[in-house]
Length: 201
Image (cartoon, rainbow, N blue to C red; front, side, top):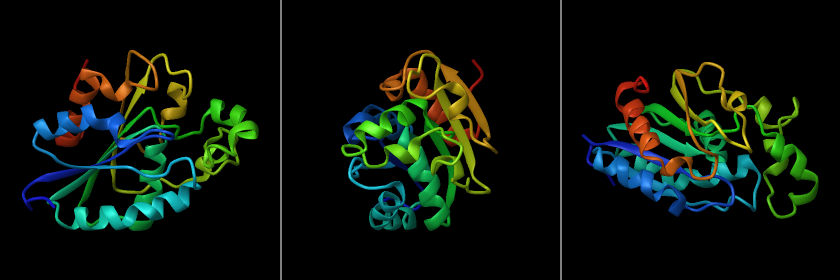
């Protein structure tokens, strides 16, 4: 539970990852005064909609105790946040920072889906095909979205991270897998959550 005067952040990791992948980001946000809920979920086993529903029992009491609620996500976690907010939007929701999100799908997911869906159930939904699930996923209205893309991401292109109606978008050096561990990304994330904009670079 959080103090009612404390801004709070839900962190959602990407596919085939765990909360440990966002531990450095979590500590950085705690140092900036945010309460955190770094959630794990069975990202390999279920489709996106089922995963979003499974998050609700953990997020709901955390959200109710927060003065302001934000989300910070990596990769597929951003899609889960969009879906969760469309279905279970908390009253005090304010801002979302997405790190390398496949908002317009991923070519890598499209290529691997025929071969690895048995191991990664959500993979077909992440395809960049125009009729894929992610490409039909609505964007929650009235939410500030800040997106950080990686310049050398081989899984999600900069263009594929873009989200219609996004508030701000920035690109940092590096790749997809460890973008959340960069000090500049941690600083930019905290800046957006506090100010609603990324710092000028």
